[in-house]
Length: 113
Image (cartoon, rainbow, N blue to C red; front, top):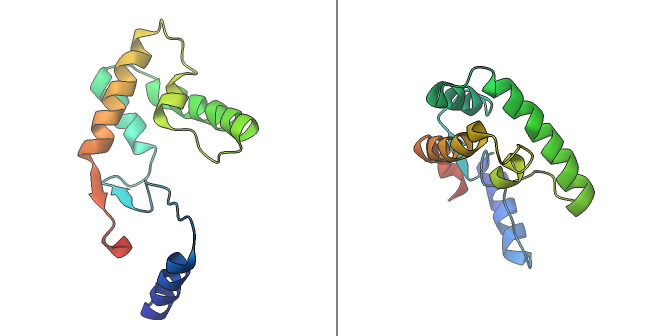
């Protein structure tokens, strides 16, 4: 964004009653090339071959569900893992590991001061 666009955006924000931002990829960046890299890192971290591929599929299922049920564009992390069997130990380890990796790899988007 150039300076004019930033100033226009700031004016719109000041005039708005409610302003919301998508946390990741807007206010915070990950130190990864793409979002799905977190899934690969989680797979390695928990030692569960095939986890990354399955995690992507579960996210798609969860996204469809929250769009239909609530009208939200994206599920949160806990909503995604709800689609995993709660008796599946991999899911329990993975949710915790993914959350920790997200926190470790998060950096502030300085453009959004």
